[in-house]
Amino acid sequence: MLCVFKRHLNLWNISLVSKTEFYQALLAQTKALISDEADPIANMANISAILFDALEQVNWLGFYRVINEQLVLGPFQGKVACIRIPLGTGVCGTAASTKTTQRISDVHQFDGHIACDATTNSEIVIPVQLNGDIIAVLDIDSTSFGRFDQQDQKGLEAIVKAFEQNLVLGQTKI
Ligand code: SME
Figure 1 (cartoon, rainbow, N blue to C red):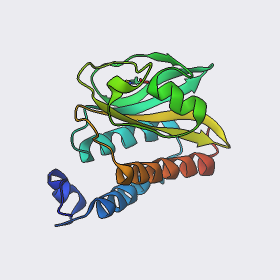
Figure 2 (cartoon, rainbow, N blue to C red):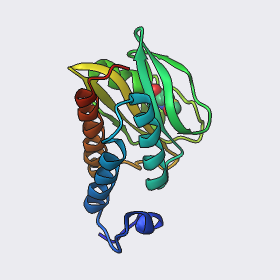
Figure 3 (cartoon, helix red, strand yellow):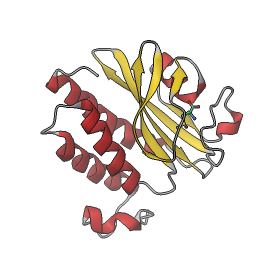
Figure 4 (cartoon, rainbow, N blue to C red):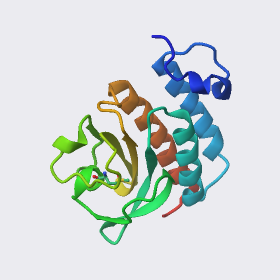
C-alpha cells in the first residue's frame, strides 16, 4: 500500500512505507523517546506529542488517568476536553472498565459516547495496564468516520505495550 502518511516521511526518514512499516517506525521512535525516562506523566506528554504529530486525520489525542474510580484528563494534544469521566461511562470509561480496546468507527452509534468535540466521528481507546490494573487510557479521536482499522489498533496497542513495559521497568506509579 502506498504511503498515506506522507507528511511524516521526513520525520521517519523513510521514502515509501506501508502502514505496518509506519507503525514499526513509530514504535521504535516512541521507545527511544521514553526509554531513558521513568516519569509517567512526562512520558505520556511526549507520547501524546509524537503520536499527534505522526497520525493524520486526528483531532484529539491524549491520556486519561485512573484516579479514585474516575478517569481524569492527563497529557494530551488538541482542544480542551472533558476533565473527569466515571469508569464505565463513554468510550474511555468502557475501555477502562472492560480492559479492552474500544475501536469505534461511528461514535454517534456508541451508546453513552461523550462528545468533548462535536466534530469527532470515530475514536479508538486503548487501556494502559500496570500489574494487571488499569492505570490510564490512551484516547484518539478523528473527524473521519472509520479512521482506525485493525492495523491501526495493532500498531497503537504495541506502542501502549511499550509504555506499559516502561512503567514496569521504572517501577513507577501514576
Ligand atoms: N469521547 C470520549 C471522551 C473523551 S474525549 O473524546 C477527549 C468518550 O466517550 O469517553
